[in-house]
Image (tube, rainbow, N blue to C red; front, side, top):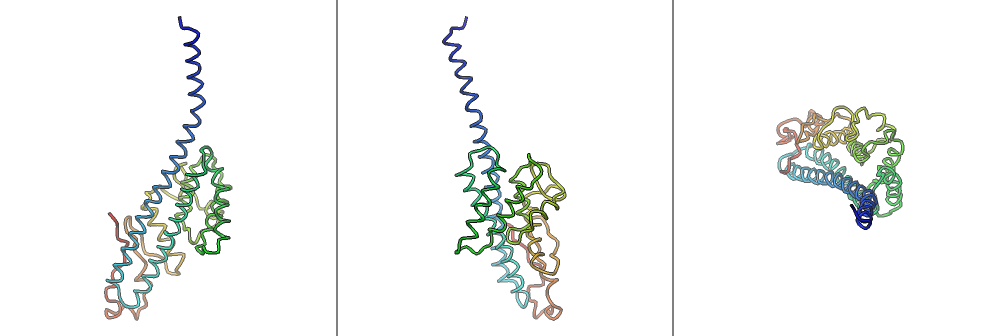
Length: 250
């Protein structure tokens, strides 16, 4: 027969488990969110290294009128990824220091809006990141799927462009694929493939000429299609007749 003190101890243990379970769940939610954002930052750092490697190679290999054109396009893509890194660092800081677990969507909507206000009123910051953060806050508020992975939703928005963002309504209208973990039109893809397509979109938004096809692992810049007939001579093109690719970083 179990003594009264033993029953009391068992009951106390059960109560302790029940009381600590929500705390453990919230800690796991926070850890998963941070891991997601840190993986995105890791991919973005790799992308920046690829762009820098390509910039250095371009200086050595490309000549004539194509040089300035190619460098400007690479710098446009680099600026996009620099802004993404800034955004990811801020999100990681917010979640790490202020998110106690629970509804991440409810946390991020006001947090992003406050981040946008701070960025917009900061006289020393001229990146324009406030616009994307404000749009993200609005998009989260308008997101119809309550159980959707909000970080995957923001990742899909980010892949359309941070530096030149589409409106929340445009993004929501474009989304025709969602499985609760990945949010992007069409079939699911790896983060590397999404990054390639995102870079192509950035180039298209900053040029009237359609970007060249994108291949997984290396982005072909729309260089040759934008070079005038006069500059296509072997003397003026030099080594620039070859398409410029983002060098993969191993």
